[in-house]
Length: 512
Image 1 (tube, helix red, strand yellow):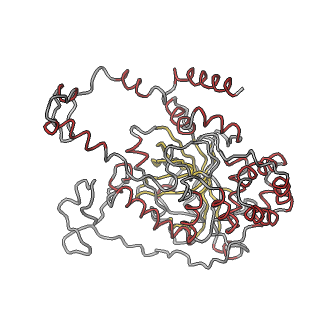
Image 2 (cartoon, rainbow, N blue to C red):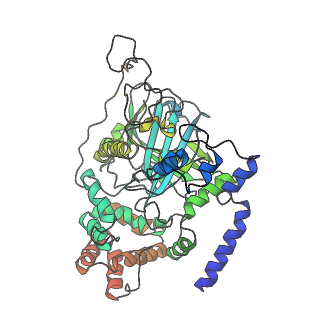
Image 3 (tube, one colour):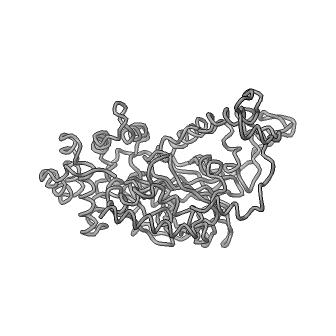
């Protein structure tokens, strides 16, 4: 049966390749060029003679500049991959404002209905390494860079409306618990479930990860969420607080575990291929952009911490307000240059958007910046895909590892100065980010609401089955601890998991 399925799948893939921009990219390039695009050169621009490019036998290698140039470059072609979100698909397009929210936020990208702002988007599994599969059971990163008139604004979100932990001190613990065991170099369910049961606030998000939404059917059908409650101001300095939501116009679709396994066997790059193929065929994916809006009084009287990223803001209390729509209509010309080097940071904010006052947001401002320095060097914002498109950056930073572009040319390299270097602007109504007190995390009520009222009976059954796949092989004391917390989430959930474990039905389960 499996052989028949694989043959049928491969045949279907072969049929699609005739009109497949992803499969035929290099063929399309040939058809669009009348012949060789020019004489090949060294990286210094010197033309390369035919014999040097074709054979080195019986010749002096060190005098063959093509050989020396290409070989020494080859061993330096890889940069450190992202610790998390290493594998990704991405594309470019535009955001269009469809509703006036200037009374809420003065950011220029929202200043007029019909206004368009260029965007770059990157979608990525969290745990999967660069050579891994696109159909893993995992949360997904959902990052958008808006190239606004006031510089770049980045939303570094997820495909779940909540995050894993409330205290950023747990960031290193969470990452390491999901990565490979340092002794075996294997992914270890004991490590994951140790984290989840030591930090039970994480179970709220992982009910989605283990549920039907745990494996998106490609990126075009995946929603996104900003996860943080952002503080924004209008022209009068009045504060509001918003959460971003992105819903695909093509509808939300997800894969079942068995479907995901079969796809992984024949196309580990399923989601990346699907996104590239759709855009290449002119089927441009788009998302509706909405926000939840809270006033300062709403924040004070919410009855819970609205800045807790492990919680959602109830839609019945804080309904969605449409803001705009974004469309992805351009594939990258070169993946490494435009997607691998695409650097996002929560610190990329613009006037009118102050960011989140929670500690996770504050920690991410440091972590993302530090990651870019490590991976891309001190001048990562001078890499073209990270440059602000609609304004010219006038920073006093100089020198460092390339690219440095014009390196600030001949104007002063320190501030303040008396010699007409760039000056800071003055905002007489500049607000300060709200200072908040955050209590210990406790989101069992929302997790219970998700299980009992937002999942159908069929979805709850599949959730239990998927949890058993993951929990079944782990050590007994972690199983007991997990059952205890699942019973707190909801007695039915805990009892069903306990029964599944007791029935010893997990011996053949495996994680995808």
